[in-house]
Length: 401
Image (tube, helix red, strand yellow):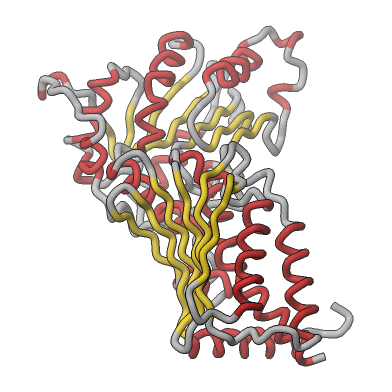
């Protein structure tokens, strides 16, 4: 029985780090970044801003969590629906969708309240943020959120937001959350949701009486995540360990390279195994990558236009590593992707001392040339200590649970 528990703990160790990281980024969430380690000026390399007259730059107002809460209030008979877009100059998808936001503002001006809230460095409040808004000819009120705890602000806006950018949310005139979009906005869908709120009351019965929840949630994240392939993989690995068919501590190094289809599955993957790798563990490593592909957990990488993806698993006497390297179309996009992932992981803010927090502390996000890299690494001593804690918790868990 002890071997079975140990095997299960090892299985969790093999892939829960990856599952948690990707989930935090896009749906179970996201995530991360210690407030924009990649400055917004890196985003200018791809789409340089034309010079705007300094005297004509739009005003950007700094707000904190209290200020954000006041903006969210919908009070009085003349209250209007509220549309908010959260963005940053270092976020490529945010910049790309902005012309659509300007169109929405022009079409619904006076009918709804529409504001934008930047998540940039405070130092950009008089530089890149207003310059970009001027370039876009954006007329909606603009704010920059500066708070010590971004996760608190994220929770205040919506329980359905995990921190990824861009993020757009629509409230009705009573302050009820009606529609959200995680990722680049879809103009037609956003218009349809706004039109529903503006329709005559008899055509929109009950729309303003929603007390909780959301009528429309859109995300380019992992809502379609299929956990079964990974669970099946875990069962097969567990069975092999119980039958002494595999040594889970054996050294191995496997890399699989391929492209992603629209559902996040690897297309024509090519696997390579380092000489001297344990044959059984190498096969299970390749099977894990296949299960990861079938789970559709990699689908969010499509948002960063990853042209090629490499997934490497390796174990030696010193450490266990999972490295995902995604090649994009430019250095700027890779840097932007790394910034977005770090930010999203930061605001996920797992409980201190939890397994999630520990696993997240072993995850590094970086960019190198046109690639951004997710590196999950743990020393063998850390691994063994973590597994011992897992085993202890399992032993102490009440039998009736």
